[in-house]
Image (spheres, rainbow, N blue to C red):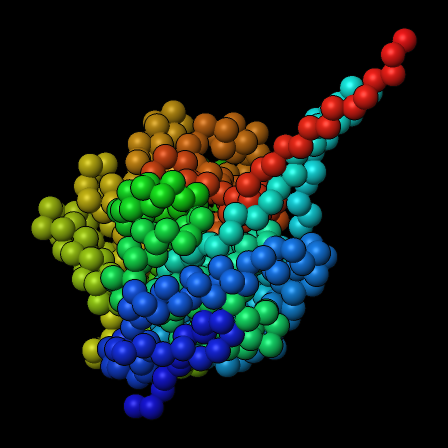
Length: 474
C-alpha cells in the first residue's frame, strides 16, 4: 500500500508526525493513508490563512470571481481522477461520483456569478446611508463523508468569493478526493488562501475552539453540531451548521403509483440513503398504501447493490463501520419490536459495509426507525387517511431540513408546503438542490443558510456607512 496524499498548507505539501488509514467501504480494507494533523499543524494552517488574508481581501471582487470560476474549471478538468478516488473512499457508484464532481464544478461556477449587494438606505440632501458586506477573516470549514467534494465546495466557493481565507478539514473517512483537489488548486488559488488539513476526531474540536477562526462552517450530525456550537461560544465565532434531517414524504392517492414509487425510491435511496435531505419516512395514503409498498419492494429487488467501481452498480455500501452498525441496529430494533421488516433488496457477501434496501411496514410513530435519522437504505412507510393528520405527523420531529409532497393537485401541494416546518419543500420530486436557491434547516436541522446570495452573505459582516452632508443655509 503506497497510496498517500499530503495536506495543503500555504500552497505546499504538508505532512504530520502520524497518519490515518483510509478504508474502502466496499471491502473494508485499508488502501491509503493521509496525515493525522496535530495542534501545531493546525496552527501553521491558520497562520498561513491569516497571512494571506490582507492581500486576498483587498483583491478586487471581479478578480476573486474569476478565481472561484477557475476552481470550477479545474474540478471539471480533473473529474475522472477525482471521481475514481471518491468512489474508492466513499463507496458510491462511479456514475454518482462523477455527478458529484460535476455538481461541485457547477456550484463553484454559479457562485462566482453572485454579486455582493450594496443597500442604499437613504440618499437625501442630508444623508447618504449605505450597507455593504465585508469579509470575516479566516474561516474554518468541516465537511462530511457523504458528499465530501460537493459539500466542501459549498464552503470554499462562497468563503473565498466573499474575501475570506480558509482552512478546510474533510472527514477522516473520506479525505482523499478533497486532498487531491487541494493539490490541483495550488495553480489557481494564491498560497495560504485555501489550506486543507486532515485528522481524526481530535482535530474538529481543535478547530472549533481555535481563536484564529472568525467563523466555523460545519456539515454533520445534530449531536456534533451542538458540540460545535458549545466549543465556538467562548470566542463568539460566527456559525453555519447544516445538520441532520428526518425528512418526511406525503404521498396522496391521485399520483401515478409506478412513476411516483420510482421517484420516491431514489429520493430515499440515492447514495444508499446517505443524503441529509433524503426521504427518511414516507406517509402514504391508505387508499394506495399496499400497492405503493408493493411497487417499492419490486424496485428494490431490481436495483443492483455492490462495489461502486463495478459496472452496473446502482447502490454502494454504507461508508463506514460506525454508520453501518447504527443502521443495522435500527433494523434489529424494528425486528425485536415486531415490526414487519421487508429486506426488499440483496447485498453482496463479504467484508464490505453493505445493507440491503429495507422497508419497514407501518411501524408505530414512536418507534426508533420513525423518530431517528437512519442515514442508510432503510425506509419506514406509514399509513394515513386524513390530510391534517399527515401534516401533523410530518411536523412531529425535532428536525426540519426538507420534505416532499407527491400529488397531482398543485393547489393542495402548495397549501401543504406552506404548513410543513422544513427549510426545503419539493413537490413531485426530491433532492432538487440548486446553487442559486438558499438552503438551510428549521429547528434542530441547523443554523444559518447556504447557497444563493444569502449563503454568500453568511461569510460576511455587514458595515453601514453614514455620510452627513452639508446643507446650504437658506
